Length: 63
Image (cartoon, rainbow, N blue to C red; front, side, top):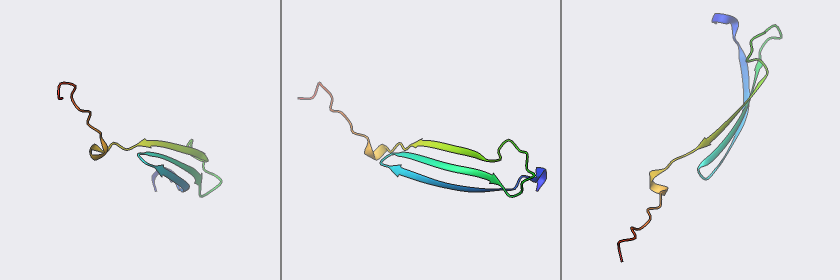
């Protein structure tokens, strides 16, 4: 592998309604790795946009 970047990743994610939160931890296979990504915690926040779930408001002119 170019650059000798070999890592394991462990993580967990939670999703509620249209929102998500994911955590991941990246750690090297060998102790000699000096890459900046070694032993880092990653956090991802996500929002899902669904056209079907959108609520259309009625026009004020309609009575």
